[in-house]
Image 1: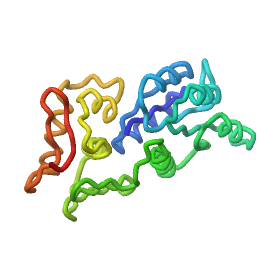
Image 2 (image 1 turned 90 degrees about the horizontal axis):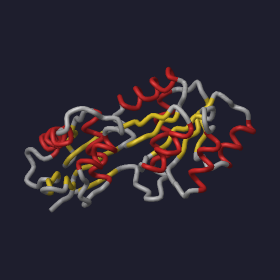
Image 3 (image 1 turned 180 degrees about the vertical axis):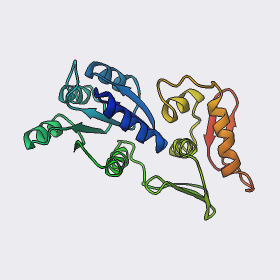
Length: 223
């Protein structure tokens, strides 16, 4: 899952980003409203965490502009301002939820998961492909009823592939959604992690589900 965090306070931005990445999310960061608006229109995010008090353009203006441009991505407005009028203004601007700092991170994660399920291409809370079941809420994966233990990044990769069942997804798309905009590590990281996933998902089973499409990318499906 790919999340944009628009937060100008460095410490808060680091806390949110680190917490999300530890849960396997890919995170882009913007520290001002102009960059947040640009990124939100350039990439397809599963959720946008938008601080109200941003320099350049405040969160209300960014949110309203995105909605006027037809960007449907779920938006969680994040602020230290808890006045009713501010909440009403944020929701009227097009936000899907409004969360006041300070907050419990577990609740924050739950709200992110709930918002991601509100995307126009609604997805069920549990994903099932053949005999593989993935539960985003509990982060549990099973195949044929047997638990499969994945790292946070392996889980994120499997989630993305299952979410696009039957669709060939390129390495670039995977890199953007499972890692993030600023990833500068190994160029073959996608291939490496697909290999890890194959070892855990397909090894020992007669029917493989992770397939390579030469020159195009990968597809998760039963053939």
